[in-house]
Each structure stands twice: as structure tokens, then as C-alpha cells.
Image (tube, rainbow, N blue to C red; front, side):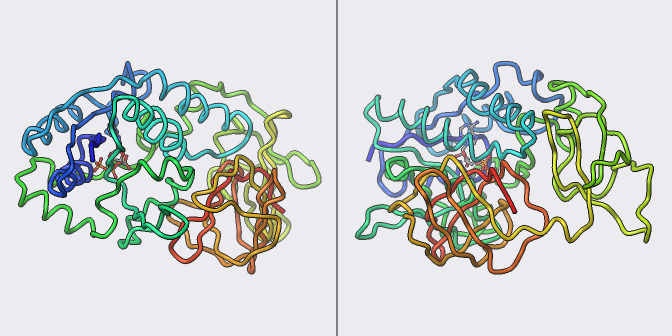
Amino acid sequence: MKLIAAMSGGVDSAVAAARAVEAGHDVIGVHLALSSNPQKYRSGARGCCTIEDSHDARRAADVIGIPFYIWDMAEEFHDGVVEDFLAEYAAGRTPNPCLRCNEKIKFAAVLDRARAMGFDGVVTGHYARTQISDSGKTLHRAVDHSKDQSYVLSVLTVEQIEGAIFPLGDTTKVDIRKEAEARGLAVAQKPDSHDICFVPSGDNAGWLRDRLGSEVGPIVDQDGVKIGEHKGAYTYTIGQRKGLGLTVPTADGSPRFVLKIEPVSNTVVVGAREDLAVSTMRGERAVWCGPAVTDKPQRGFVQVRAHGAALPCSYFFDGTLLTAHLDEPLLGLATGQAMVLYDGDRVVGSATICETE
Ligand SMILES: Nc1ncnc2c1ncn2[C@@H]1O[C@H](COP(=O)(O)OP(=O)(O)OP(=O)(O)O)[C@@H](O)[C@H]1O
């Protein structure tokens, strides 16, 4: 096959590209420049698509012996990922930008351009697997569950999965680093990227305040009584306990947790730990990675955090919203996160959580 290897400059995508070449594919390496002005999003933070990362990617392509190009996708990334991230926070939700990047950039803009140029698909260093079955090519968890990235790939349609090649899904990270050493790749011990690539590490709240403002507003209890003040409602997360600065303690001294963020009234609602319990969630923007879910309730598992557990549930889709009823309630679930359905290790599909109860 003719393939584009998406090379971030990290160890995973370098080994993925090398494996694709070794498997007999005709491969070219492509590094995506995702920010036209890295300092605009990041001040000194390590993340994807710094100049050094593009140099690392180019050096890896040289060692592997494949042609290498840089594609400027800064505008697509800004419009599809950064703007969505800001809009979701402004609406009081907690988005997952890696998932949007897979949906809109790596397996949309990049895959579309690759196909238009006569390529068959895109190779990435994601930890996930695909399998060919009677119902076509399906998406599965990686063997190394601690590195599994199927959650952030759950937005891929059947057609996008067709064009996705994940050569690392059956290997552990430890073995990938050893393999990179053996292949003479200089990035073998390069640290993993963490956090959100366009936000300075550990300063999500400050980054959001700079862009969405820091209008002071009330923190209220569930009866609407003001018990504190916040500096930017969207810098809080559902389930947050620390840093609330409440002025009125509870009668028994028990802690309070963020229950709800209401952007229109610029209010943060707090309450007791048990009030965080969620038994039912509904999601919009549903995507199926295989056969579509129907309105007939089915048993399965739902995962609501990138590295969270898969929780037993029953679920159905009414044509607009995906609903999942958990067997056991879960504490603290933020809207804006993905609810990803699994059948064993196969990804069924996902939706963006818009309601919880
Ligand atoms: N700027 C980029 N240019 C090209 N491909 C990219 C870029 N950023 C990420 N990718 C692709 O998406 C995959 C997953 O991205 P993620 O940010 O999770 O990287 P990672 O797991 O740290 O992998 P790596 O070690 O290759 O950086 C990468 O392995 C790579 O194939």
C-alpha cells in the first residue's frame, strides 16, 4: 500500500513508520505544523510541533530512509481543535482536544489530502489495533492497556478506520523504546508528551482566563445561596474540591464539590460528595466505529475518561441522543467528555456527554 506516516518527532510515530516500511509498504513521512506561531499557544512548554520536533521527525525519516515533508495544518488545527476547545469551555463543558484532533485533523484533513494524492491511508503511532471481521475493519484497544488510546480514536467513522494503520497496537511502550534503540533512532528515549499540546503544561486555567476573560461570579450551594466567589467559571471542573475558597463552611465541616458550571449566569454550583453521583448520561454528536447502535437497549461497557475504567451499562440510541444507564453510579462526570462504548475490547462508537442525572 502507499501510506503517509504521520511523524510527530516522537518515538512512537518513528517506530510506527519504520514498521510500515518493513511490512513492505511504500511510505512517506509527514510532520504536521499545527501552530503557525507556537508561542501564541505555548510559552516554553513541550508539546507537539515545535521546530525541534519537526527536526526530530526529519532525522527519524532519514534513518528509516523515507522521503519527508512538512504539511502546514495550523489553520485547520486552530479552527477545528483550538476554537472548539474554547467554545466548549465557554459553554461550561470540559472538552477533550486530542479526540477532536483525531476527528478533524489526523483522520480527516490529513487522510483526505493523502487519499486525494493517491495514498491508501495514514500510519500513526497511536496505541490501538484494528481487525478485519465480517462487518469490515473494526477498532480495538491496544494490548498495552496502560497506553491504550482507543478512547481518543473513538470518533473515527468506518471509512476513516479503513484508512488508519496503527502498527504499535500489539506492543508495549517499553518494547517500542528498545526497538527504537535497535533501529538507531535518536528519539528512542525522548520523553512522552503529556497534557494538551497547545496549552502550557499545568496552566490550563491561566490559558483559559487569558482567552475567555476572568469575570468574577458567585459560587452557590444547591439552594442558590452564595457561599463564595470565582474568577472565571470555566476554570473549574466537575468534582473539583480543592481551591474553591468558600467563605461559608458546611454545618458538619464536610467538604463541598463542584456539581455544575452555568456559563450563562456565570455561576458555579457546589454540593456534597453524594450529589456528584451519576447513573445516566446522554451524549450528542454520536459516531459509530462499526454497525450503528439502535433504539433496542443493549449491554456493554462505557468509558468516560481517557484512562478511566470501562463501566458496565445498558445503552441505546434514539436517533439523536446516545443514552447509557450505569449499573453502579459514578461520582463526578463532566459534560463535554466523550462517552465511549466498548464490546469487550472493540470500540462500538462514542458521543459527547451533554446531560447527566
Ligand atoms: N505534529 C504531528 N505531526 C505528525 N503526526 C503527528 C503529530 N502529532 C501527533 N501525530 C501523530 O499522532 C500520533 C499520536 O499522537 P500523540 O500526541 O498521542 O503522540 P505520542 O503517543 O506521544 O506519539 P509520539 O511518540 O509519536 O509523539 C503520533 O504517534 C503521530 O503519529
